[in-house]
Length: 186
Image (tube, rainbow, N blue to C red; front, side, top):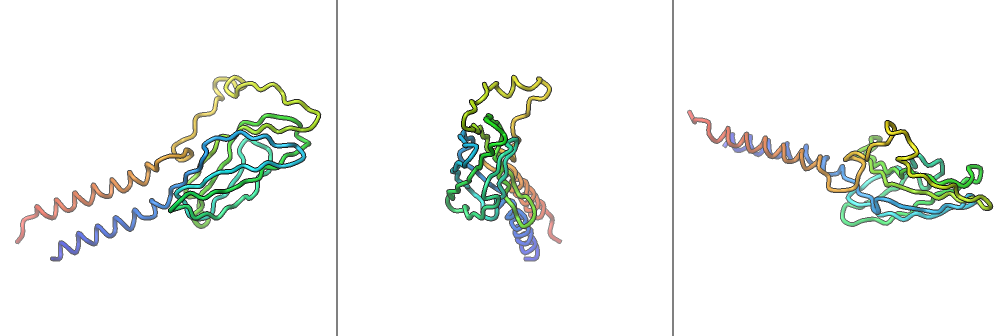
């Protein structure tokens, strides 16, 4: 009976340790966006947040414009939540095409739990100034400076790290059960 209680305690411990990993999942759709932002105004961008409950910090990467709100509180564990961001233009920057990202950081307290980047092409238009001819980002940079594709924590999709942790915990648990079950009894 003591072994059974020990095994059940081990199962409870593994499941308790795996629970926080399940919360570390964040999905954003769409995975890319293209917007026109007037230099003297703003444009709304609509997204859906999936699989996350808590605060999400929002910022722009490689895009020198301002976005609001900078922090969203969402509860999207059961179903996706619609969010609307406002991107403000800046006439002093002139007409430009910006290729960058909108970064979403899922926060757990003061710690970043997960990050997702949405690819964004922003046509920043100032009245009276035409947009410059766009060159593809890969051609504009020397070959050694071509940015790498986003890593697994930065892309939307199935959360592999928590699943791998649960699988490893289950393998350890099964091993313990087999070892204790095969021990000779004295």
